[in-house]
Image 1 (spheres, helix red, strand yellow):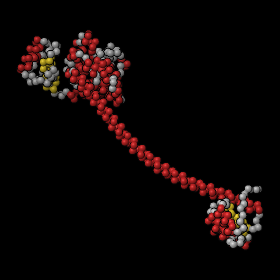
Image 2: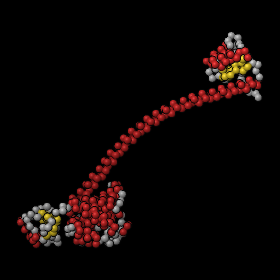
Image 3: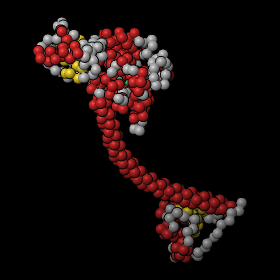
Image 4: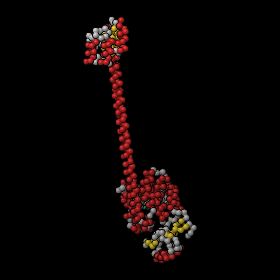
Length: 409
Ligand SMILES: [Fe+2]
Ligand SMILES: [Fe+2]
């Protein structure tokens, strides 16, 4: 067994301490009996200069007490009795080196742990601060986005309001029509379980479905569809395409624009403008189509919701998606019962049946379209006479619509 050690020697305790001041010595072997200072004193002093060194004291049998003192005060690792066996001493020294390495390693690891703990603590504090800062930033950004979003939504609904107002300005008979169709379509979409986004798109499409009529000639807006000449009809069928083109520039209205284009398609494929058939017609357009027809029927010659529904029912096979009828009926009864007061009904009369005090529920025009009296006018002897004369000279296909209490005719 041989080990490669560097050996530093000193002839006395003070010499040994001088060496320790210069270099770190892993293992110190000291005799107990030395001049100037004892081995126990030397080891005690060496501890201050080199605390991690492993100390061994060589001592004779008579000096066991001193050896114990060296172990206690000088932090000696062990003592070796004189005379020693070389091999044993070598083993002890080897053990001492191992212990020194362990002590050093342990010290290094402890320091490393303390240092890493400190760094972790610092990181954790920094991370916490960073997360807090980010949370604040994100919360602020979120608030800003919510504000912007609300503003955008507001803008869109303002644009929608202005556009549908334009349709009504252009054609008085359409007053409330867009609103009614939008309310009915929305109810139907909800009833059949479409998503809120689909429902919103349909409601916007319904509100704007006839926007293409703004560009149509007056005569087309005044007449009923079945009264249009073939030239006028050719003009009328353009309004869904014009409507889509009119709103296509606004990104939010592109989806609704597709529904505007197809709101006059028929379920049997005989509608316009593209002759789409059945399920190929977007569901939103099928909904708007049936809601539009019901409201037009109600505003036309059909006076009650029951009569209007019967008319729609008769066209289910050809014009509408039959699967939507039940939802339409439910929506219509709910909507119109809240709009029409139960005790007030609208009736259509001949001029000879008019009497003072009745209120016109619709504008009255002559057969050629000259406006005679506005909706809301209260009838008296004088204006009844005027009406009778005008109707005699230029008869209209329709009677005079007035509101009256239920049971009065
Ligand atoms: Fe239309
Ligand atoms: Fe319409």
